Amino acid sequence: MGAALVMTREGLEASLIVGIVLGYLKKTEHRSYFRMVWAGTAAAVAVSIALGAGLFFTVGELEGRAEQIFEGTVMLSAVLVLTWMIFWMRKQAVNVKKELESKLAGALAAGSGLALAGVAFIAVAREGWESALFLFAISESSSKVSTGVGAAIGLVVAVALGAGIYLGSRRLNLRQFFTATGVFLIVFAAGLLARATAEFQEAGILPRGIAHLWNTGTIVGNDSHAGKFLAALFGYDASPSLLQVIVWAVFAGTALWFFLRPLLPSREAQPATA
Image 1 (cartoon, rainbow, N blue to C red):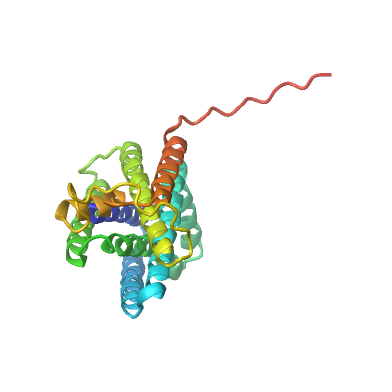
Image 2: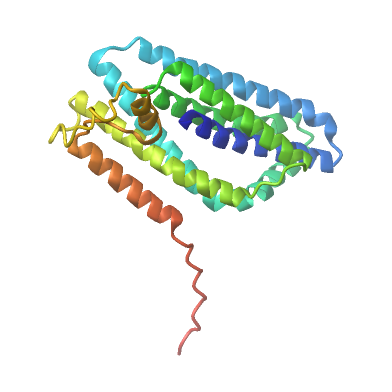
């Protein structure tokens, strides 16, 4: 489910961008550039797959402390990227179309099909790289098969939604969609951060402190299906350290507060006084 949600969100963002590009070219009677956009998209997908494969093969060659440090670093990187993406999308979603069409207009004015391919490549490659990071992090607490199946389901849903929006046959309140998925992904990111903390503790980079704050292993074990499911979604650990719990709570509470608080209206300029 975690992989499906991540891929639905990331895939929909990429689909929307490609859809905006194709829609603008269609509106301005430049259909001949469609093939350049698809070429850029295909190249980005290929690069994303290669980068993802590199992550999985790299960790397979590592053992012991090096593996723990590498996995913790990748999880921490995923948290930083995911958090940035969530807040950036909340602030910039309204202006994405306008900014993108401005870039497209410039590329068309210059008659550069390569620039059009580059717009699609950069957008899709960014989402693909983020997806590779997230899926790798998820796979560390779940089986690679279930992660792959979830990712495939999420990608199909994302492409279907993107195609429906482009064709005008499906209406989706994007603000509500990104808000709802943003809340869920913040909790997901808190779990990743807690797991990264555990990896760094195992590697001796962070202090152990109280190593076992509680133990719910007799109720939901880490190796059970329910335990793996909760670990992939929320970073569940049957016997977490005190530092893990603190990191999870502080990050989730702070990020959710900033994400959900109403945007304050801009202050009007006060008249100057003599």
